[in-house]
Amino acid sequence: MPLCAYCKQEGSITREHIIPAFIYAFQKNIESSVIGWSEIAGKMVRSEFKVKDVCKKCNNGPLSDLDAFGKRFLTCSGVMVPNYTKLSVNLSFDFDLLARWLLKISFNSARTNGEHAWLFDGFESYILGTSKVYPPARFAIISYLARPEQLDELQRNRPPYVGLTDKNGRFNPFIVRISKGTVPWRSSYTLRSVILGPLVFYIVMFPPSVLPGHAASAVRNLIKCIPGGKLLKSTERFVELRSGLKTWLDLYENQVIRMLAI
Image (cartoon, rainbow, N blue to C red; front, top):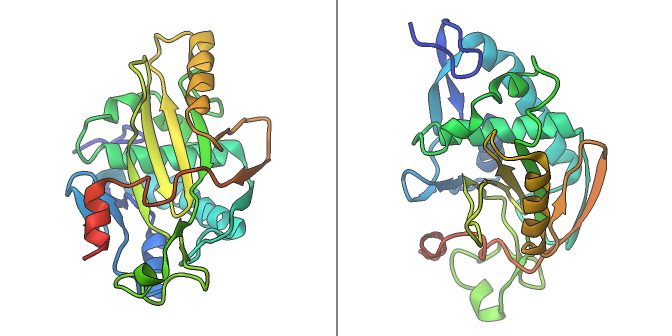
């Protein structure tokens, strides 16, 4: 019998959503045909992608609880809307719950191709909540708010933007992307990203061999390359984000832009 990817125990294996089910429900409610970007498919997808390696106990227990937290977090922040045109957002959060939820989403995605799955070794118990302390100096989370795309009158009257922008032509849709990020220089860490509409979370992941001081220095250098980005701290419960220079279109690959324009 296969082992659960989280608790490493034998049990009844079930399918776990990569993008949480409540996000699919939200997309369907607003009659949107675009869910998010699939790294494996190399395109925007509308299918409910799942991984089948999680036991029923973990899936229906702690992982379901994390998704419930994620739904409250996105709803209370006000970003889970068809078009977020504000230039700032106030986030109230519990660091451990938010970190565990983002790591869960990223871990689920990483297992679909195995490229970065090894990075999460030792994180499984933290994600489940059975270990209260995350591995020291193993990860950091940088938050960022994407700026709305400003479309001119000609653009906003062309598909697929007709009726989607606000009266000023601003557009910032709720599209999801879970992927590896780009690193501006060679380093000892790996960057994973979770994009939830206008909210972007960069998860900076370090191997166990990296010293805490070196990890902290790397994070400080990375933040300098993300104007508007803020490091989330375990000692804080609130952060105000002001939109950075990049729009949601800037954050996606050229092929995604082409698909949205079809």
